[in-house]
Length: 149
Image 1 (cartoon, rainbow, N blue to C red):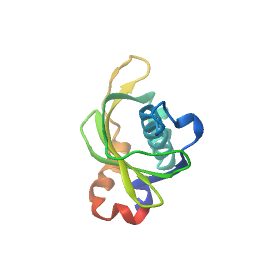
Image 2: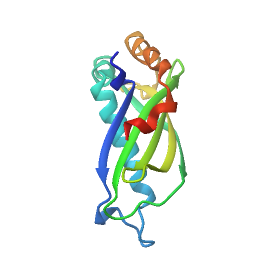
Image 3: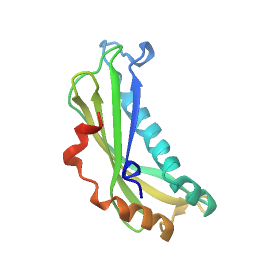
Image 4: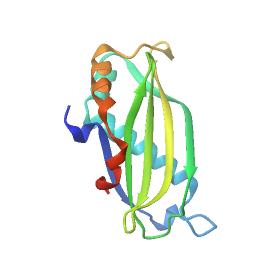
């Protein structure tokens, strides 16, 4: 797999509708960006096509979000995601959200995504084709992540 598909980078900007009553980036926007980049990543690396062909989809089991600094109106933002590990039915996806101008890490987060059979509405085993894709992710090094900003 190409290195750029082991991780995915999404750039955006803090808009007026993203600001909360405290005059900083609303917490819910971070979560939206996490979902947006996860979907973009699985579409870019072919995972979406495989899950759809097998009648499968991903459901969120758990989000963990740690807010480290504030984002403000007009900030250019870089969101980076990668799949750190997997089980037979789930993946553990990580996210870092940065302010581009000074490379400040605003937020670290992770999500457990569970594979679900769309017909039965129950957890399902991740297909072998996806196991191969995710196995190729294992050598992604977080140490150089700031070079992606």
